Amino acid sequence: MYLRETRRRNADGSEVCYVALAHNERDKDTGVSKPKVIHNFGRADQLDRAALARLVCSLSRFLEPAQAMAASMPGEVEILEARPMGTAYVADQLWSRLGIGAAIRRVAAGESARRVDPVQVERVIFAMVANRLSPTPLSKLAGAAWVSNRVFIDGLPALCDDACYRGMDFLLDALPALQEEVFFSVANLLNLEVDLLFFDGSSTYWERDSADGELLHDPDVDPEPAGDGERPGAHEAGDGQVSTDGGEAGWPVEAATRRYGRSKDHRGDLPQVVIGLAVTREGIPVRLWTFPGDTSEQLLLRTVKDDLRAWDLNRVIWVLDRGFTSAANRRYLQRGGGHYIMGEKLRGASAEAAAVLSRQGRYQQVAGNLRVKEVRVDDGTARDRFVICHNPEQAVRDGEIRAQIVDRLHAEIADSDRLSARKRAELAGALKTKPAFNRFLRTTPGGLLRVDKAKITADTRLDGKFLLRTSDESLSAADIAIGYKQLLEAERGFRDLKSTIELRPVYHHKDQRIQAHIQLCWLALLLLRVAETETGDTWRNLRDELERLHLVVLRTPEGTLAQRSELTTRHKHILARLQLPEPPRFREFTPNEH
Image 1: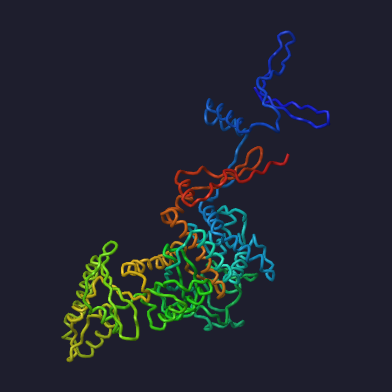
Image 2: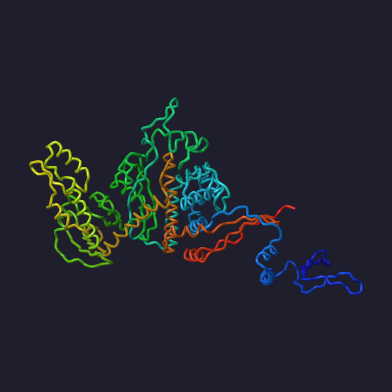
């Protein structure tokens, strides 16, 4: 039994092909086999191919699985390769849905001076962002090989490191226009609430022995090894490879960003950059800034405020931690109708904080185990509202931690009375370098070391408390406290930047490449946070499941076929929650040349 094709020529000279199911029967009289039509399927160009597929499936039920596969794909089938595609596919679809790819192409189309291919540069930038979201974020050199050999990214079959560098240079030049387009596209699509903006600062170190301006390149003297031992002018193994053709050539004499400063990563031995991050109450990163490594947190806030003013984000309430509290910062944030919620230091020399804490009043229970009490202090120079927040569970933890510190301090100063005056002074100096001990250490007029019980009593009254101040009159005390607790979203953003996305280590030698690398991480954080927000799951869990989806390339007698693996129930759930289409089952078929 077989499919029989017959051709007929019409009066106008055109040829029509008909398909029928037939089998051969031997004529009893002549003994010659003749075809006998069992069923006519009609014209070949009008076949109901879906019905044929159902017929094939129905027939396959009566065959062994191996026989069914051999029948549907006669001849030998080879698996040429299998590349993970799930993580990159979801990231690419979000990239498109949020309008990031379109924004990059629009900006690139207007960059006539650079003569960049808008589609190509957009694909290159996406590939670098997708790599930060992969299980193993890599350097630009290794990332180019990752795209070419290890993962499937639609529209980018191969990538070289020089294309990565050119893409980074374009990204930094186009950043102001791109950031604004991306923000409004994401805000409109996700209906973001930007009445509260949460801002925080952090830092990341740069893998080099000297800050900018401290190492000059003497052509007669080989510089110290950079990164993993490579020298300028050759390719590095680290993130931000040195290249002699379009890469990062030579040592810069001076630049604006890399400076020694107060490192939040406890790497004061390395030059660093300061990073500012603004997020919405949902945790969506609005924008990311880079500043010189020695920039004070109280100074960078003004740049952030001015930059967002151009986006008509004046009348928002800024939520900031205690590092930004200063009278100058508070007044600056109020320009143009803005307001703030700020953390206030409890254990400082602030007369306002002392006055607030001394006021009596009842606490009001709010969400969870948090209690709040509003206090006003108006001495004619400020009209800020203060809110004292108290967490009973945190108070217990604070008490336990203090007890441990005091016990250790007792052990440190035990038998110190027997020491000479000089030795006691040395011990006191060493203990005072540790803030936890210095809080409770007292030196008597005679030079003896004691635990200060009065300071312990005073510190006990602060257990479980934190103090907030705000310029906004419309928010309730509960809203102020809950709003400030959402500042954890900015802190969570920095944790994801440094761990999941692996912002560091940074080996780039050019200042602009460092900034571009950090902005690539911002775009990756944006996709990550949108995926987490809409699915209600962590990116690590999402990625672990998505990595199971592969694109398999098969070689058959008829040609080469690229087909994805089957979607799991979890895959379908993730795509549905993100409102993304399922990836096509078949990607490409290349027939053999006969």
